Image (cartoon, rainbow, N blue to C red):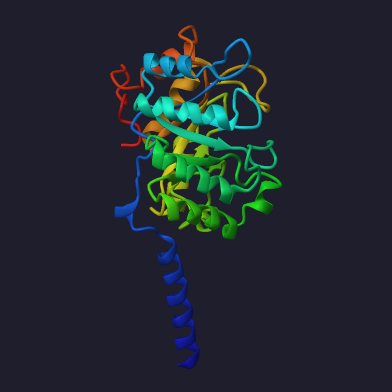
Length: 293
């Protein structure tokens, strides 16, 4: 009998721990990325290589994007100074903005470097000034050596740093796999994740990949689907063909809580931009303005 009571107590404690990690669904912003794909665009530059903020915002508006992603690095066109100018400009244009911070394996975002708690504080303060600054992304959170830095304890510290200043600001890092163990490590310390489909050759299996990931999360935070619009270091054969790009975007909108498009060109001549625009407000796709709904 005593042994049974001990086992029961352990089970109750375990269930309590899971429950404590799970946020109250009524307090979660399940569609923080918006109802249209968010454009992570190739930087629009001036002749001196600096970011052309005015043209960037003009193209975003012209193309119909209501959400944009921008990397913060060291030098133009991705410097902290340029990002702050972009934050002011997109805020005035009613376009949401998501900064991406580089992890140790990809370089460094300055001026706070690899002090991501300091970054969370700085961006949270900036978001009070510009409400359309909607969240913070750290790229490749669990890739290779990044795992050593981004322990659960450190991820929770980043989350709490922005919570103290502006709880509305979302902390949504990038992952590439999301099983139950990974979800347990993140639950309670993120506002969601960006989960990327890395097969540029086909969309077969993507819907199951997203659905299984959401099952692992068990309603504790949103899962946003990432789509590639450009060749990558592991796929140098070229950009995804239009048919595959269309299908991955459709499935990201349908099976996740929202969608992002990596390295989409904002120039009207890009054939993949023409497809992306069909998913934006007023577009011809049945999922236009309905991503994640």
